[in-house]
Length: 173
Image 1: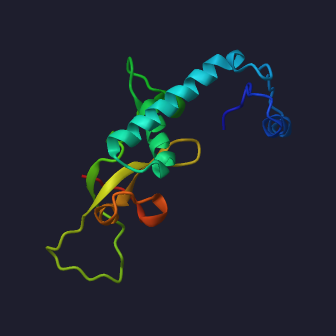
Image 2: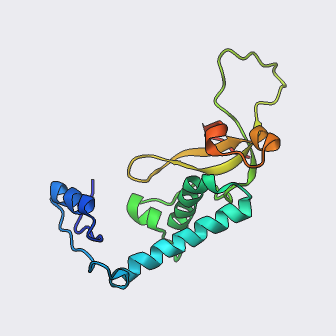
């Protein structure tokens, strides 16, 4: 549990109210002047650009943007520069996740269904599209990946998140 020193935002009423309720100091930007919040605006623009790149390179529909943007932020926060990353500074250790491009085709091992009887040499993996990393509260990686079933995309390349099963799995290959 880290103590919030300051919560900087625009003058949105809901944010000001939340800061008051949490007893956080809450400086705000000048109303109607986005340039007074330039650092935050530049960061938001960079994340939006990165999200568009993730979607374009993956070929996935824009409805996948919440996964694309989360994948981008995870990748940036685990990027090691001079032996440190934002992730390691927060959690005291480097993240051990395989950094896999958003939308990459992977083999994954779904959680076994206890009702399925498989022979000893039948495949235990399926094809899927990597869409992200599962996070615990506080931003620590759970060691699980998020993978969308590939078969849905074979039938309809414009598949949306509502139309496909997303698996949380420990293993991707």
